[in-house]
Length: 92
Image 1 (cartoon, helix red, strand yellow):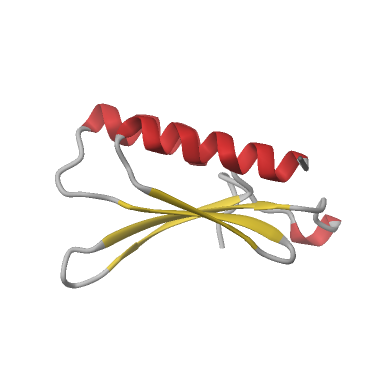
Image 2: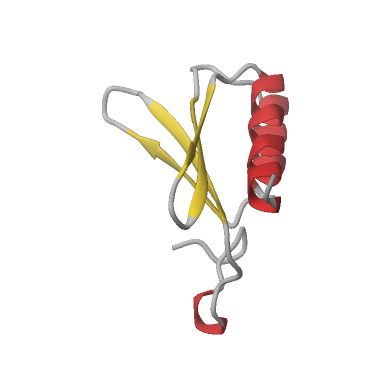
């Protein structure tokens, strides 16, 4: 199993442990993880969620006006070029 897939599965497992239902999708250049975030979510659970997605190359939260929240994270399958480095400290 490729390292990116192992990392994505570990992130998904941590999110599941918090109680989030996760979806993992293999794409050409990355493995994507998505989870619907229920309301409310305790501060302790948010900390665990953020620690989990911090292991991804990129992550974010999509919130809609109807209070739906989808957490997403991606783990790249290849090492990015020097000019395209992302991660928790450099979100786009």
